[in-house]
Amino acid sequence: MKKFWSMLLAAGLLLSLSVPALADADTVADAYAYTDETRDYGGEYRIPQINLPGPGAAATNAAIWRDLYEGYMYDVQHAVDSGEWTSIQNIGYSWTVSGDVLSILADVAYDYNDIHDYYVYNVSLTDGERMSDKELFGAAGTDRAGFNDLVRAAVSAAYDDMAGMGDAQFLETQRAASLADDVIAWAMPYLGADGTLCAAAIVYPLAGPERYTRLFTLAEQ
Image (cartoon, rainbow, N blue to C red; front, side, top):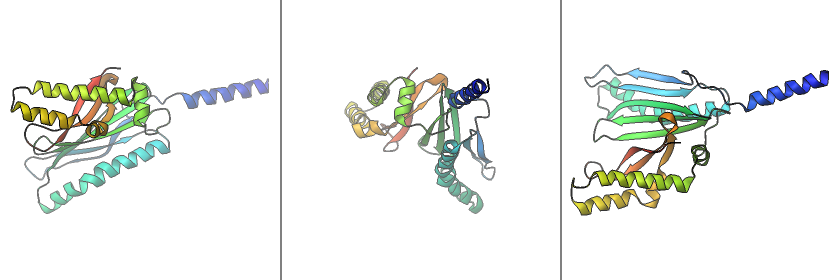
């Protein structure tokens, strides 16, 4: 009987280790929040952290902190302290959970030309480890080639929507630049609302900056 209960306890332990953590409203929260009230335009800066146990989540939180706080907030804080200008207008984020996947999209917004720096963090709720693109594609029911095809279609459709807005030859030049293999390969996958597969991809516009990063909704799971 003792052997039976020992086996049952062991089975229960293994089961508990294999079940993904349940996401709730506190799965992602602010690690840092600051509102700049020293200037007329203001600015809100929020940096997320993942509230999951284990070294995987801790490593992702460290990466988020390096990317967002160390990458941008020193400049913002120097501008506040010195009275100088900073072009970094806001830092924010959104997140969603679909199955075992937690996706965080961080958005660094500048005050000109609708420029954004985007960062993507895809994490497994089971073990808190950051997911590879291949793992995310598997969860979304596709692979790298399929994802690239979806990105190409979405980017090309964006240029279709710009038809007639400027010189047709220049539009096709910019379309070709945006659809180049190395540019498509840079695209970052993440899951949006309701588990929708999305991407942050480079686009060469008809006016403004040489290029910028734009968000695309690709397909529903």
